[in-house]
Amino acid sequence: MIFIFGYQPLSKNLGPVQEIKCPNCHHEKHWILRSTTYFVSFFFLPLLPLKKRMEKTCPVCGFSQTLTREEYKTHENLAKLNKEALRTDMNTEEYEKRLSKLT
Ligand SMILES: [Zn+2]
Image 1 (cartoon, helix red, strand yellow):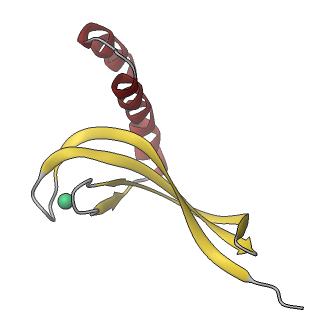
Image 2: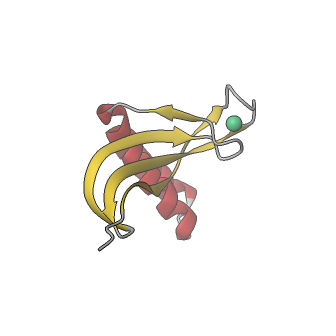
């Protein structure tokens, strides 16, 4: 009988955050907030989460900065708001109003 165990990351794109000049490629773009959870997998099915990495990533070159849990929490709400603003027809006034509640 053969058992196939593995170790695999699953990434989640949470949305764009602030506009940052990348120290690697020097493009100024909205970086993407991303969380990656590493799982032990059994027959390619993720079973046991081992560690979670939270980062913001340059959309041009993929350069990333690791975030602390507190930094991630503040970025998470901004990413949700930006993602919703992109998905819906949110006007500037509504966006600014909701943005001011975050800070
Ligand atoms: Zn870059």
